[in-house]
Image (cartoon, rainbow, N blue to C red):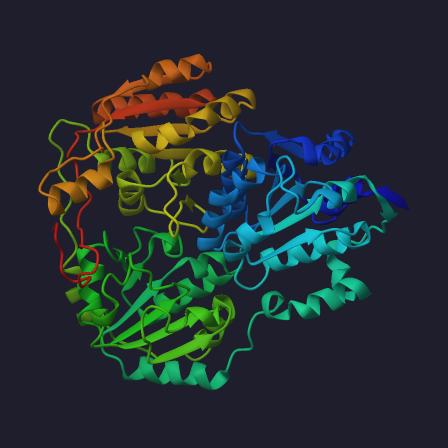
Length: 566
């Protein structure tokens, strides 16, 4: 049947089982929004307050559901407002398809009103991007874009469509997602993108080599990253792997949930704000098995010294990550789930009791309370009331406290900007996570600095009655930067003090959202229980002492074993 390009876009999204779109309309994408009007009973569109909020919401939806998120925006500033969100998804391997519309083809390249080369801008931060000028190719491009976004190492795809294509007609044939590979034109396009669409073939000799290294090892340590979270089915295989071996296991921020945070084998987070047990173990292990992590500078703070006494093995689906940051002694290229399944078939019996006892003897003692509201009390209270809640964070001290003190128990329970460190990410991500998981409680942990960057989305939260609980860690400063200024810049607090408005409770009230301000653990618990019971959006402002620090801490560029704050 003949449909307009705009109708083809919506029909193809339905093929991909899309039920939710986040976006913001504008002139060049109006044909698409006009077509969307007729599909309002089949696709739910969330109008955010800003395109960046839409990008983060689509990202949070994708991370928490495992589906591909979808975001719409218009040309020019609408498209460029997505860039931070695209980069955030790219750095954390989150599958999101961004659909923008550009000026008509006859106006491209003429500095037309609201024209921008968004494909050129986004090229370094997408798995793939397209500029569609032929309505006859539109459906297959969208199908391929979704396939690339979800396959291999997931990531964002941008599809930019010139406006005239959205008005032109073409033949459209419904093609269920399950039979795309048999479709001639699409199959040809997929073959051109085979490196993205198929997981690498695993070398069985590499599997045997790692098994031999495990047999020989007396002090092994496992490091788990976000690749295990992203790989479908990998978490059960990973848990079987570490539990069979009884091996101490450290986690990156993005690896939260691969092993429950209170599991007897977990040593805690590793890196700049990693636990003593994890960081010191990297300096003493004789075999380090890193699965689905990038060895970023927040993990391997000094790559040349990172686990230098150990045999380092890296398992990753993306060949480009091997030896990029840390030189390895052995590597296995492949999907984490399949690699772990192969390893689990022949794991040797190990007695690591003495090594485990040594590693865990370095764990930090329980934190104490002094009457003031402590960050760990906030997270532990949330844990005690609902340990299955999805925690979305912004970036800063509260992010690290959340990773340290909340015990994540399943993939997608922690939604955070790990690679790009995007302040302003949390509110949109929390909205997307809640809309994708209506039966789960979603808690946004955000600092007062980050909250100022995304509080415009209170309008979205209120309008759609998205019942997220917003926990603002208000210490009146850009806390993480102030912490560095205290330790490394002689307490010269240049431009980090936030001695200004707004009054967060009055701001929430302006949007019709209930709130509470708390200064003790008892007050926080009462407010959180009220928020959990009300079934509506709720903001809790937690008054935190200005100089609370995240500890341990390692200075950038120093060995991960040199703890500045211990």
